[in-house]
Length: 153
Image 1 (cartoon, rainbow, N blue to C red):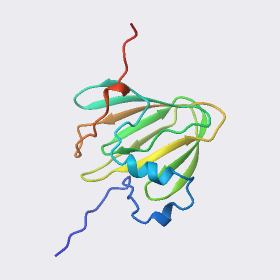
Image 2 (image 1 turned 90 degrees about the vertical axis):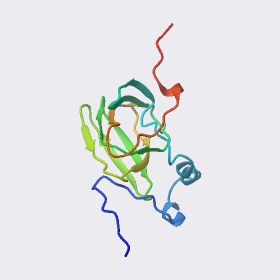
Image 3 (image 1 turned 135 degrees about the vertical axis):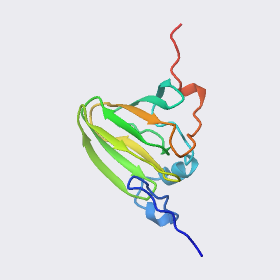
């Protein structure tokens, strides 16, 4: 007997068919494959406790953050207006307009995840604060020390 896992609504599959990414810019599919276990969901990890991590994400106009994986519930808030293009591990590309104060919540159950990258396609910097709850059903991904906020000397 085989059983299939039921995923929550925020789970995004990792499409195993490389042709699903043919419409992506050159090199992006290979970058995604190399970053499947990247736990850096922001630019700088500004605070961390046993139950949560708080990140700042800054993407300058024309820039893009690397692919990263979300494995537990989290939310983000946009700190300003802007335009973004999301590249998702399913092969989907999604363009969105963000506004200051916009907040989105995501929840991931056992075995759920989402791998994506965000590109700034607007003329203003994209700034977000992300709160990641690391006490969920999935083991939080490791993050390197160099992304943790350093006190100025």
